[in-house]
Length: 128
Image 1 (tube, one colour):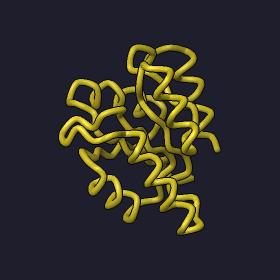
Image 2: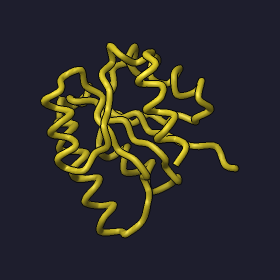
Image 3: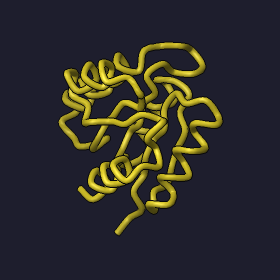
Image 4: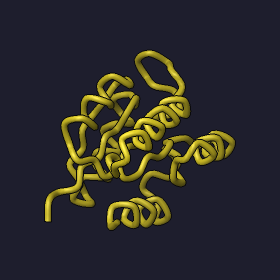
C-alpha cells in the first residue's frame, strides 16, 4: 500500500514541526504549503489523503476557512477524491463549526495535538 500523504497549510515553523512529527509517527508523508497556491500545487501533483489548514495562514494572514471552502469546491468540480479529507487546525470551536459548515471534517486544536482524541481522529481519517 502506498504511503499516505498530508499537506500542512499555513502553519508557523514550530506548529508545522509539531504537526509533522505527529503525522510522521502515524506513517504519513507530510508536505508543507505556506499559502493557497502551494497547497493547490501539492494537490495537483500528489494523491493527498489529508489537508490540515490553519485558521489564519501564517504568511499572508488569509482565512483558512475560506481556503477550505475553495479547495472543497474545486474537489467537487473535479469529481475526484483528492484530497480525501480537509480539516481546520484551530482551538476555537466556532471556527471548527464554520469549517464543517463548508464541508470540512472535524478538525482539532493545536493545544490538543498530542491527545488521544486527536490521534484517534487522525488515525480514523487516515484509515479511509
